[in-house]
Image (tube, rainbow, N blue to C red; front, side):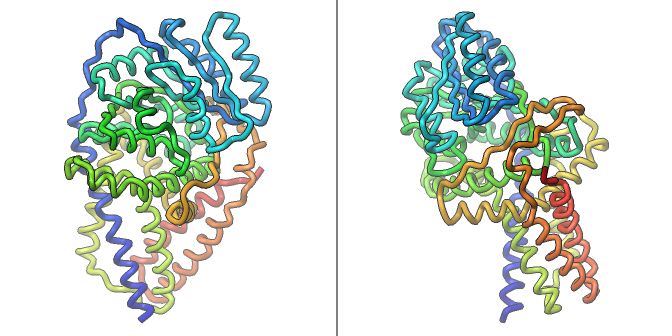
Length: 472
């Protein structure tokens, strides 16, 4: 009975992954149908408020304020709000920079709260009471928007009075800082260049939390920002669209930002995103399927909201594999069937990254090692991501674990070591390293060479993550 249940679970969670892999074909296809909107020059400049949520960003906040003050927009139509919840020397840097800009005539001010209620979403919601702009731009501390950011996003949002959100594409300041930032950037590029443009062509685009312009009326129409879940950006996106507002993606407008420069920061970021996304799935999937959206839009919205579930299903399949091997009861799968189903799935995923690199005119051959590294990292963070998703399934909200920003651009730049995220030992990955080693041993004893190879990929993933996190 036990081996039958474990075998069923293995097949169930293994085959649940397939639709997400095959969906990559659709993403590539619809990304080719994406068309950048024709934009006219803005003539009548409306008031725009830029909100800069900041929390202990001493390394990047000066660069951020400088970039915002360089935006091409009439000074009498621009309001800059620094939402500073910091508890370290960032406060002094912000006060100094804001005072200096005010002397130059810039309309910039600081908003501080006595308590950090609701974390980032709470700061954004609180700032609505101080916002006078018709449009509202949100820029995270590690981003550097180009001078024409407002010209282009405002021109885009004014093409239709029902557009509530315009999202720009993320690019990277520190892509070539290390082999890990090269790999991480490839994953983010695939999302922004292919997936976001494809969903824009389909008719569903989400705000990514930074480098976006929102219509203030649309935010207020849905009751403002919410912090009952950790991904307030996905939350506001679906609430706005459920109210009938449209969203728009600008693939040709890029805003530079920092990629997490080390494994510890990336692991933290992915864990939070996974937890927040599954909380959004619980909150919105029912409303998505009750909405008047097309079937394609409903399917793609469902895949988007549950995307991180793939990692949890991978992890559960791994968990049941080892005891099945220990009992020598691993279920037989016809090799042609397995290769046919999962070979096509793997090829579909490859086409996503291939299309991403070709669109950027980058060498696919030179990037193959980074594609492999990205895949290993995906396996290696599966335990952390699955744990965070389980927390999200059981409970809304939670602690907003920030990702440190270091102003890392050049290879010679050094990471400042005071952040606690760098001081955590990867106990979870170390345990899974031992667990997969046991599975490899059982597979060897049983002569299950194909499964042994499968487990070795997981082993390499956990090894890569565990020994790339060096406590300082």
